[in-house]
Figure 1 (cartoon, rainbow, N blue to C red):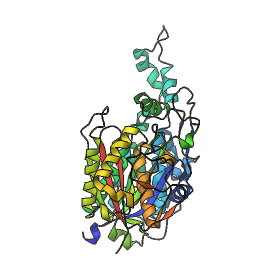
Figure 2: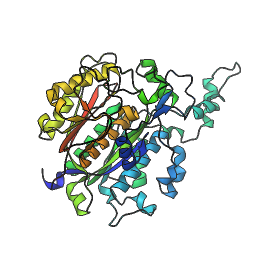
Figure 3: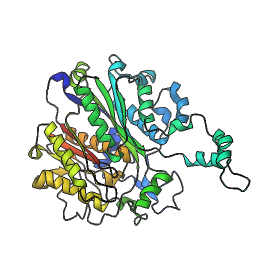
Figure 4: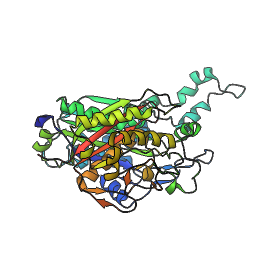
Length: 446
């Protein structure tokens, strides 16, 4: 692959329940912190699961130009998370985007060429703001006190802002990020559940490799800390409803006593660049992205019997794309939903591709610390993988003990472990729909 087609990672932006920004997130991982607790953004007492991973307090104004703050009123929480991640990613990369220039935070050097700056961002199905919607619905009652569709059309809808719907379209994450940072090259939105981030990063990788852009901001974000997002998986029986009194132990990926997932909000965006572009501007390079593989399993939501086939195929495709094999991988990052059937399917896939190699390389999962961040989960995992490779350190993985007997993953238990990591692979998959994707990163060498 010629130098102008090699793709490197130069910026990392994270918004997680254990920290905002790559440094804060990484240090919290090393300290084995947990960001799961009782939900504070609304009263969860009527729901079977009352715990989740919420972001630390922040002000959106700290992450956008002053002139753009009026647009905050049409940003759902998911959009806000993505905008926060984008700011951190661009600043970490010292990439002079429109946002950083207008905020007076530009680094030395020229502004990025916006016509060669693209975006691929994963998103979930954004839940409506119930308090806003309920207020409008209350004005659409008929004379009998019941909801009236006619009155909704004549009165109820007028109590919603004219731009109300724009807050809840999945593509609005990429829309606001590209406007704030003036990214005018190819832009795309991917909505494939928890696989969205890996797929978005992979698509950006392909965009750069074929020369359609010089820089891409990519990843995903989602907020699952709202009543509708909690109610749905609760009805499906996927949430841990037995550990509301001990949230720090509730999310137990691959553990023998796992009892279901814990929802969260968060996400991550990364800056990918062509190698030539990164070197021309003297960028710090975290790692090189060398492999991407995607696949799907033809299974229904009610059955995971054959779900491992799609995950195995995604892993094999990523390894093949990177021209490597399991014997040359030094770190694996599985997803680890903490749901018995899903973890079993994922373990089957990893065991089938890596075999006993899994017993000889360190593994890492973030689910025990931050829960399931939906479309943002994979990007957070990918960023953790890149940081582990860059710093030759594997952070501990919370709540993976006692391990499932079928689990070969070698998770670090309590304290960080030094490790010589040349190549690493991260896997993400959608809990519903069967999509899966894997990414391989390599230590950068000129």
